[in-house]
Length: 58
Image (cartoon, rainbow, N blue to C red):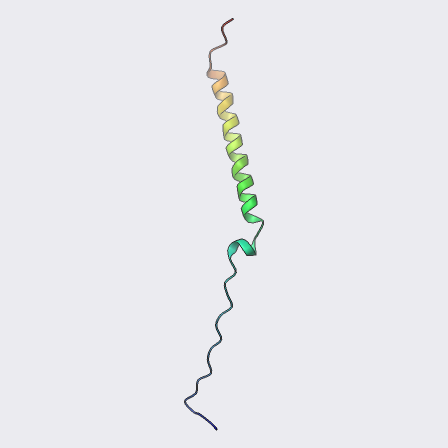
């Protein structure tokens, strides 16, 4: 039995793999870099604040 009007269905595309599953190391790396940058900024602010603070009164 031939059916000339039959169209073979197109298979669905493969599911998209989330970015975090393709690169599972990326989020911890970004968090670590952000924490290091914030720590560096805080240390530099503390150094400047210590230099600007008046000396302790004895």
